[in-house]
Image (cartoon, rainbow, N blue to C red; front, side, top):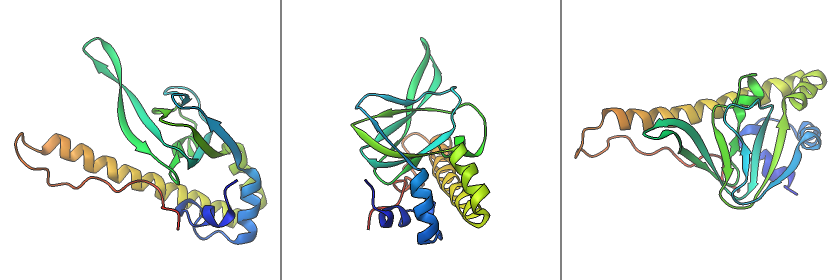
Length: 172
């Protein structure tokens, strides 16, 4: 079981009081995935985000290829990272697949859980949604840097954009 202090040190839970964090922890569902297991599939309806407690996953996207479509790796997420944040905010199909690179333990928070927080404590709800938005924004900025580098660097020219920082907050 993940300690409350570990969760509170993550940006996703920044600014949330001990008392409110205990209430959120009660809503988090412990989940386990085996190496190679597909955690979420691109195109399916999603309703939860995951906080990786142990292990690592790869984010995969279907793209057109020479023989139809193929999956390409967009990113790797590790311990203390969050994944699937968009699915808890909007009601769109999943934009990518997530596959366990090794055995993974995670905590998940569903859209319904988020609604329970909204009903019980609006200030905590606002903080949590703001923190989720910041996580999405941080990841989007990292992807923007990668895309810009890929699109605008000339062959043989050194890349001018540094690679994005590893995602998530390290354990103190």
